[in-house]
Image (tube, rainbow, N blue to C red; front, side, top):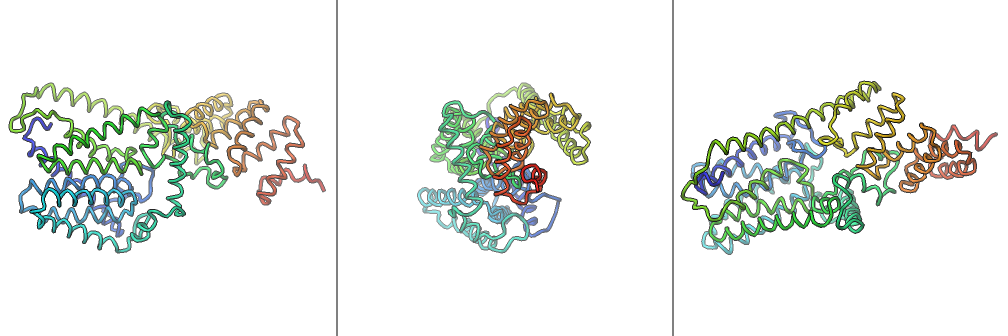
Length: 489
């Protein structure tokens, strides 16, 4: 596309489009902060490109800010007031998200911008004043207590940045530690694509118990770079870093002749920073601005920007049409699988396992292998078939779920239960013992292990396990059924 226009005209078009789009997002988001709902949006949802999700807001709007600087250089001065107001709204909304990753990235790119300005444009220092004023006013405005959202106090959010006792920080540290352990054990091969979440429990099994085993936070590593390394091995993050550094070097070198490229440089850098401490690649929105920066960086340096080159519009339209068709079909099929899954869960809630199973069978494991919490879809197939009495099929589904989530505590428990249902009590005991070893505070499968011990005649083992559980959870309701057996009056 950049070849079809003069260089500055292209940058003007793309920056204006981004300013308008992000400006609309900023207005809607800022109104949401003060509980003025323009359109209904969820406040807390799993990762995705949804405006109601604060990570989306921060990780899209922050890399968009440098395009406001490009627009400032290229648009007519008549539009400056609108641009300044839009920038103020966007920056305020970013700060109101209370995203610590965004605060870190904003601090870095703002520092780089001011350093660049003082070095390259020190004679134009007055032009910096409106930008500094917008930053200062947005910061002051963001000190107001937010009414909507997960975090309301900016001061508290800033103070928690380096607080290792803060829950979110503590979780992030454990995620990174688990990632490093995965990397050390599988340096060149990785644990496998999409398997980070299902491997994490191997290293922090003591965190899992009956109360939190479903509501876990270990969906991703909170570092796209570490997750890429842990899942795919050494060469994947190496390629990513080389590509990112190549793009940044090209953009920075071009900024020596055209300052507009420096703004694109810090936009790409912002997403790069996010990828080290957050999870922008879980959101399509984050891909968009990174793709814009990458495309601008990688277009031919030898193109004479004052002339348009000959391009077959027909061939270009065919190429874009085919690409659009492929992505559209893929997106539609994935969306269909998501809707099928939602219906299956609705049937699960009313215990209509036959209809639940029918909906699950429609889902593509390639396009939709997990739900939003990284629970394998095969886990749900196992549940449906178990209640339908299809024990062989349930076992196959549970084993398939284990392939993509090898240390998922619920999946492992269900495999043990499937062995029990099939009468393979020895294998059932082995699996329940494995679950007990990995997850010592997960009591429900340990009570099932008492049953399994009794089924193979290991009365003394079952009694000792009963006593052990009674010390941990003396009032556990499921222990009552064993009291007469082990403590007859």
